[in-house]
Length: 177
Image 1 (cartoon, rainbow, N blue to C red):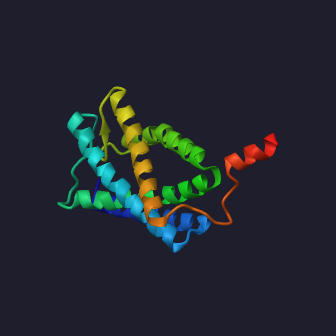
Image 2 (spheres, rainbow, N blue to C red):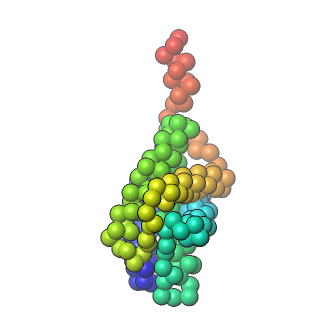
Image 3 (cartoon, rainbow, N blue to C red):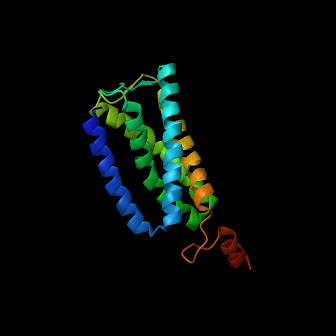
């Protein structure tokens, strides 16, 4: 992955972040929380990349610059920020069940996405054969999203406002009465 490719990826994710901010109507506190979540998830991702390389599950080239890992971290942090704003909306509406579904979705969608990118750009990432790299990739996604959401919630607090949906418990009580 070259410096130009990372910069292009960062710019595209920044545009996507702007769109997500616009459509989720996120306040400054929530945006800062999502950025904190992205930063935490990016650090975890770098650690998991190192673990995966040590285990032989995947390989990422070191890049053409001495600060490649810093560039990669910034790209990971930026790319992970928009999903946290989306998760915030999902959890606000559906509670912990929405978070559980979102975590399951990233575990299912993440590895095929990474394998597709690795097939299209083998100079960016190479996976080892077998099921272990797939499971490790899925676990990485789940851990990144869970840690990032926890960091966002720690910084921005819970979402309690007029746009939140009714709780599942309240809906259940109303229908059983």
